[in-house]
Image 1 (spheres, one colour):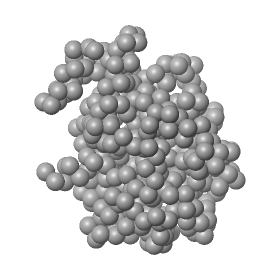
Image 2 (cartoon, one colour):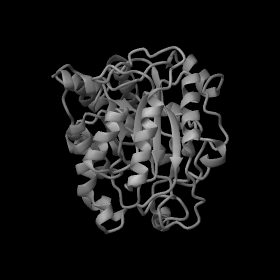
Image 3 (tube, one colour):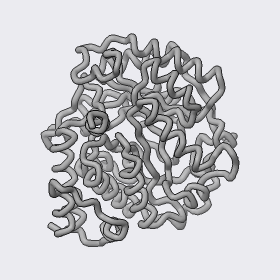
Length: 379
């Protein structure tokens, strides 16, 4: 194994510098790639545990006031069939998650800050927390008030700090807000130049989430137009500096009805984007051994086994989609989104059989909170 890689795994924990990370991202040495992946998987087992946590994903609405240049549900895309799940539909999905043994769910939607939306989410959170889990919760009584019920992650974009506080008090305890590109210049290249899409506002929202008490997650797209391996290396150091608790990152997949799609010919090949994505997962696991890292859905666009490759590189969270099949295809973030006709239950699937062959347990009935969050708050 590469000597520098051995050093990072010592108890002292040497953090590689920017140039080392760039070298690891650009290398064509397959042996080094395999060593990084193997070391990350071993470290994940040691620091985050051997199992895979499940998050039942609910794509509750594709209405969005933002106009990010890469996103298929951007507000100005007039070709999108807009939808919003009813309260009854969302609560039904929460009950389905509990019946399937998923102790945690994710509520995801396009970004909105209007009062009607905010109040509705508050009400839904209180109702979702009242759903009883099939077998109770193991390792899930994590909130200061000792409450259990469904563990809830939100991915609902930027909000005022008082709204984050309101939702936390209502029952949410994890929040995913992807930065998409941690370099300010690159961030501005993939977003409109207006007050709704500022880098500073995104960063402040991440800081607000931390102050409120959430387990905070972020992430980036890999293989963007204009992006270099140096950008990606800086992303890894950004995650470390922000001391995040969880991460969801994956390959950039163009959507044909977006401004950024005009640059699709200039992005790395599917094979290279997949390789970079897997390597980013491995390197982040080596940098931050005890955080939660998702094996994201976008990986499956580039390879039917993309999610499995991420798990072998140190990812420990998967998010089966609970959304009704009628609406799922309209949450159209990028072209070729997989799973439009796949049931949420992972039981008796090729994925479950893969995990069994690798002796990787599916941890049903567990919230799957970030060990990093609790280690930091003990210090």
